[in-house]
Figure 1 (tube, rainbow, N blue to C red):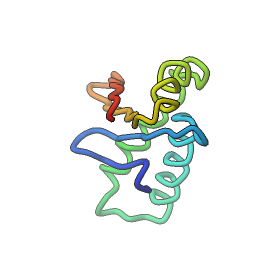
Figure 2: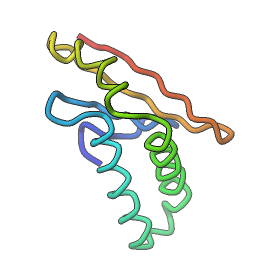
Figure 3: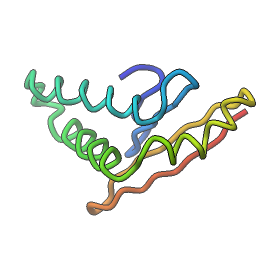
Length: 100
């Protein structure tokens, strides 16, 4: 995962930009995670499966237009937006933070 998609503790952090929405970032991270799972890095399987499931649920539950409308004004002001995704007991928790 790149600098705009990373793990922090139990959360996956997605950092959208004006060029790539948060959904595009999540789709890319999902593809990368699936590729890692398919290459059989067994020592990381549990972590990769958790990441894959979190991203999959996020993509099923959220739509780009609704999310983009919530964070794009901050990006236009030059602020940094981070989405923290965490799957706990099968329930997705999403937090958006705006940083100067």
